Image 1 (cartoon, rainbow, N blue to C red):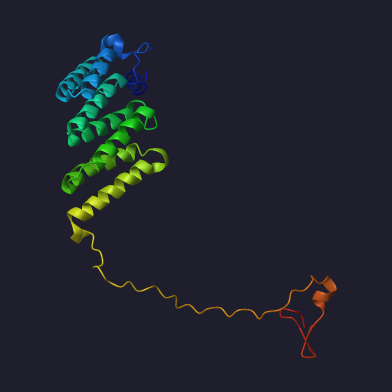
Image 2 (cartoon, rainbow, N blue to C red):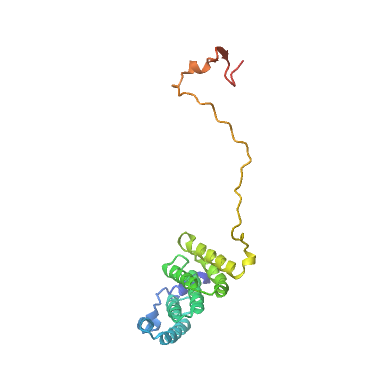
Length: 228
């Protein structure tokens, strides 16, 4: 048996025999613990939620591995709690890790993978310090290259924001014209074609009329390209 598909199956929650490994199969209290962590975070007990989410993430990783959906969901909860505590850098990096591992385990287009990638981007956009944003930016952009999102919008947004932050940190590397500088319009030096003389519309002539010379000032002249 090719080991690569087997590893992918295990990462997606299946045993070697094909049976689905649910988080509650290895940790019966899994969903209750996740709910308790979310409740603690929502009721102002952020540090308690952070510690419990970190413990749950480590337990799941030891039980089913780093790429199992149960592990990734626990780590996504850890990132969520971290963002609420103001641990923005931790939240960004954890969300990026969840998205990249999800891309490997269930694919870059899976809803859970895209959700983690979008959350990483949203939290990163909240970083007020430009230098810290530039420090984290390459990780976010690299992750969004693997998980670009619908229409590549996530990737394009990450690249544009990183470029803006880099301009703030190092303006010399991204020079702009000083205020008040007049930007001259581009002038097209190509000759302008002369307009055709205006003529009244005519009915479509028949084949015979097309072959007859056109009178101009009383003198017959042959049409251009006519045989002589």
